[in-house]
Image (cartoon, rainbow, N blue to C red; front, side, top):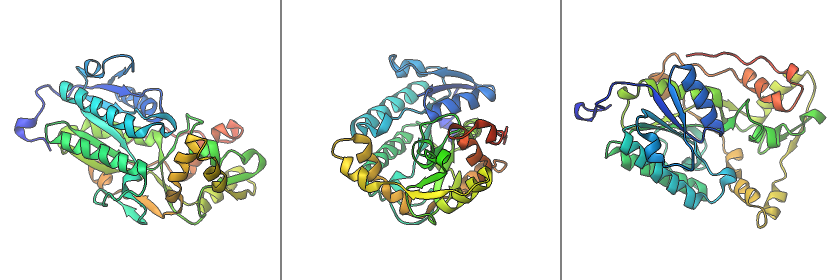
Length: 313
């Protein structure tokens, strides 16, 4: 928690600056903060971030280079800009973390899991998080909400829409790894609700918080069974053509970047819910069946998808 000499001079006002408001996390957080009564600003990339942050209480860092483009250069640059803006404004940073720094040791990953990345992108994210940890020593508060692969009912640019559900109209489900392996997913509306709830109690948190976001843990078998029940039909399960991705890697950036992260689809893992439950005891994740039904909206007749719940804390 903040010590007495670290407490912010201003009262707990409610202004949030959203970086990357057109992206998945940024868009969802913009909606969630507005719904909670916050004044929300959207950052314009053509303006000075530090000036834009003045008067903000929260900075949601939803900036992420598309298709993993030039991470080694762009991620450190974004990180430096965000920290500078947070120092100037006194704002708390909310960082959508991921599992890349945690490596490929199977298990339930929590805030104490060692950071042993086994990929280039994992090392980049590890260094990024260490930079935020160091910034905490000079008073910059960061809430690193660590989540799995994105499930976004308002976007058609997720692994579900682009790969797994792409053949559903023909009765085909595509898996990226073994069907019995549990995998961590993040339903973006849930993430945004958690971000708002944590922002509202930021004065009770440490200057750097690593908070696993359990989200939805699903194996390929569980996804297949749920979809078959929702669609009332049998599905043919196919495997993603990783060999083709490897062959295309020298010529196609996205193929190369996806292939590097293949290990996650064959590493049994889930994110612990203990710390989030301790901090937000009333918070509930959206049930898996509802999440998958809403994820179908881009891939089948929307009338067949379940109505999205108006979940609240």
